[in-house]
Length: 318
Image (cartoon, rainbow, N blue to C red; front, side, top):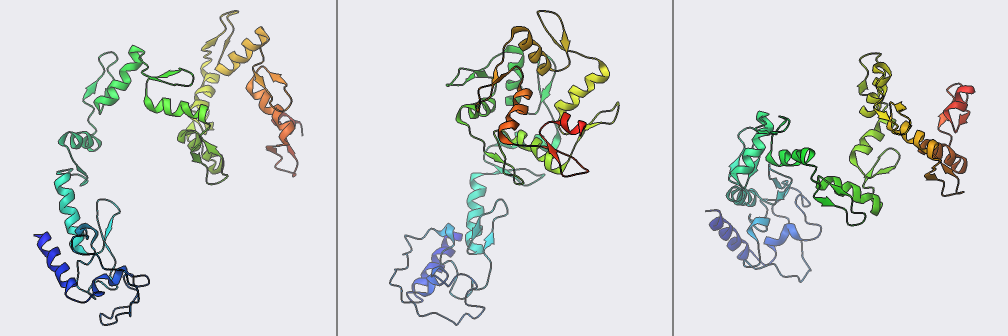
């Protein structure tokens, strides 16, 4: 048994002098610090006591090999995740403990699980099976939890409510994303420019500004876009679809923002207000253009000369 081996090794350390078992734990004497010679021993002046056998956890690998045999060797590493051990004996002890706690192993990739049900869920990744089917629309899912979430599309159930504004959501992740509106939290930062975002998807979309990637191409004309929503909006140029209609006059629009602008013109409402000067606008894009007066931002650069402009129309005129 490995426990007997650990005990034997600790007894060896106990009878080999007060300092020898603690060699690799002393400052400046980490593994490999003394070279390959097993006979070089420092003159310790520290009065710290070496832990007794009862104080030592055999899983941390402390003192599990005779002095000198471990010098110059790298720690043993667990293949399941990045945990290191000071000796193969401690690694073996860890693996046996892990095998007892997680006895169900995937034959495809070797990943281990504590329950057979969890293994069965995982194996769907390899098989591609989707055994859970929605009775309403026939859509299939790999997990029952995913089906439960989907059913809320049909039932309209929204069990996750925001405590700040009472807005409700069908998924907990959607609530978490929404709450960042109130907290102002933006945990996803761009490594290129430092700009932060509340959602990882927004960061992914933003990064295409730097990479120039446009993965969504129109099959009709070949024009490419950085976001799928932009492609969807563009395709309406070809189809003539105008799904957003004004209930007052019946006028229809290809984009919801255009309908919002139209409604503001009819009502005279100007919901977008500048914090700097108080001026209000009927649409968000007009406010964005106005804010550049205060910030001095000129994002539209001429490719021929160094002149830049605050509005794209000014660049076209130039």
